[in-house]
Length: 353
Image (cartoon, rainbow, N blue to C red):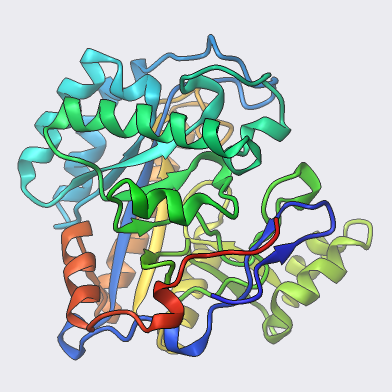
């Protein structure tokens, strides 16, 4: 990746990857999809961040959720944070789920609940990449070691909570044994909250700093979709512009998640992604959504039923279109089979913030 630069608020704005950094999946990899679960504590999404919000009771509902995906032959990668890994009950549940032999454990770092606690709790500091480098590394090491101790192996994939990576994140991950990152949310911009700006990040997997980057998939639908992130930003400046554009079929930004993404738009996004040749579709959801009352997306039993209907419809469509599920191990192995990354992608990420 070249040209990493500050965005207008001075936060991290990764540039589009160079063409040679793009992962060229082996022919036998086909078209695949993966599902990452942001496996985290329960908290009130409408309130400020709180170090004391560390509840994990929803994990009791995770075996049922896991079984629903397993019935479709779909493994899950659980990106777990500090409240999860320090809960004996949650760890016990996850160990059992990993017995399917295909699901995996990764890392998700929420800095406000992840020691050491040397920073004030604030919106700015909720993006790990905004913290001093030494504190970023100390939090990463603390969480990585806790996960390795709980599960007997170091995690290989990372996601920053709130997608809050910074200029140093990739180098830190490589230094501590990670193989892949999935913190870049294609076409999303968090700079107004002092977070990173991923407007230039595509959907395809690429190499950066010797790491494998697996962006969260975002697809623009509607007759104006070729305008992409630039058109979306322009519409956002117009009062109610985004809602009107979506209703009129001009432009919708669709992330591959059941959380606040209508099923009809998600299906269209999948068709477009596959029609344009995207070889790996990256889906996600938050673990507290498997039990009503913890996220704004699943408030009651009706919402939970709709959550599972969404997944049933999407998995049926993926099967119909010939997309197969991929485990984390399969993704890393397929990327390795492509050969070593070019020197430009192996180089350390350097430059301003």
